[in-house]
Length: 206
Image (tube, rainbow, N blue to C red; front, side, top):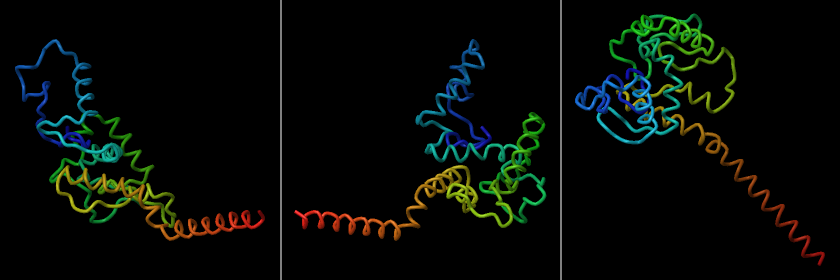
């Protein structure tokens, strides 16, 4: 597996019954669909083996959303740029050292590669970082969009990228409450005062 998924370590041998770790357990009668179903069941489980990692659902979704970018740019190592979007001297999150720039992927799936670049142009995704670039003078529309635009710190291998991606995803749900604590406190105090006043008036009339 060459694309980060939050379940397998990229470019690492996998200890599975269908891999070359266990050549004696391989059954020639298995169809491709059988092998794919086996991989799918492992992807959705938490079983650990050589070459696997554990990631949360949010971490896996974040990595899945970056798959198009990763495949067609070789993890940000592609020299190809998008006018008005590509940054300068930017280093992608978790870049593949001396990556092939997506050459192998383009050679095997040229139509899909073309679709991926079209998606990156439309979504304004920087080919070097995989992070969406906002329109000039565009206001942020949601905490989720802000989280996707944040650049994870460092590039210390796939596990680091998974953990950083999960942290970004967790921050999305916490950011609004964290930045509005004062407002929520004042609303609670105001509600308490109104309720106390209403209850006080009711008992006075009796």
